[in-house]
Length: 116
Length: 117
Image 1 (cartoon, each protein chain N blue to C red):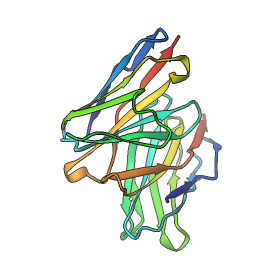
Image 2 (spheres, chains in turn yellow, red):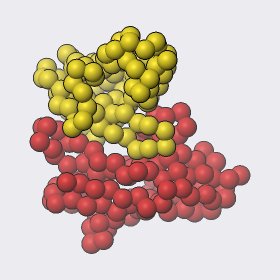
Image 3 (cartoon, chains in turn cyan, purple):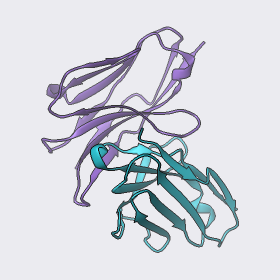
């Protein structure tokens, strides 16, 4: 149990385009989803926390208009990187928690974004 | 504020050796959870274990064991008879209830374990 999927796993795009990443909890209801960013050989950096049906709470220094997060259902959250630039290239990972698993985050496989 | 320190950046061991990954944490919360996650080269974080702050019992799961000591604020992870498949980055993390209305994780910087055949 506690499986989280993420799509796509890889994306390459041109500078200026927008990219949407989906995160789904497959076998539990995720009342809370989290989005992280990880640079090579570094730890995970929390970008934002989203509760189902509410606006996301962004960490300090994360641009809300740049990284749009939607958590419209208990099984799906999306992260849209708007007008992507090369510096947005990174490994984006989502996690989900909820129900009896509320204090544990289960992670998706991650999405590698390369902006040319 | 929470803080998790993994002092070992990289460790190399020869297959079948035992290895201990250290984790020290800081928190003012009385209720919190401690975790270990494994991140293999594929990138996905794999949940290994969760302990709550009121349960100091050590735990063993196959070749894995964890030693939680509140007196020293440590939550160390030992792999017995290491195997090449254990090669990965291991993250220790602490979770406490946040102002955002959820349990947020604070990660250590990770320890890269290389098991040499």
